[in-house]
Length: 64
Image (cartoon, rainbow, N blue to C red; front, side):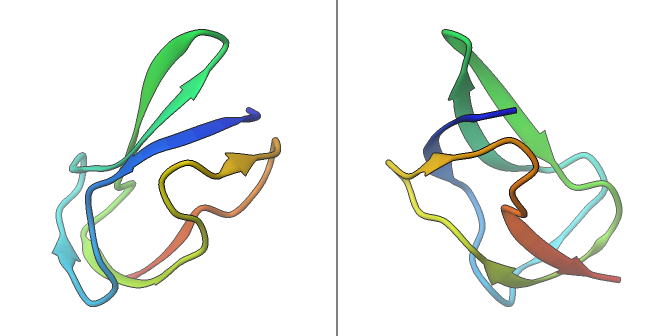
């Protein structure tokens, strides 16, 4: 969904676990937590805090 990135809670190279919160964004006047779909390593982050994102945008990349 379209929204605004409020906070990035990871960095490129971080090892993350299934369910770990990676990004907090605001959409439709609500705060949403974007969590890791699986264990892996963050290989790219495409936005920063304060950026507006469109629906369907790839926020980050996670390698298994």
